[in-house]
Image (cartoon, rainbow, N blue to C red):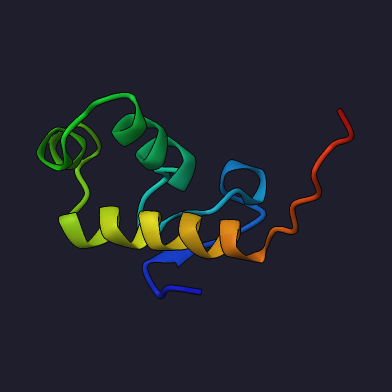
Length: 73
């Protein structure tokens, strides 16, 4: 796991957050998916571009670990 992302059961019920903040990775990724720019996310949540990249990397690694099975038609 990236050193900028932490999972602590005392913060957001163990959801992954940006280290030193209470900003969940899901909020960062969701904000970008919703159309916010890196700069807007950086300002809104007071995190760095490196934090944003770490959140995206974490999400990518999580997706890579998933196994997908096609559903029958």
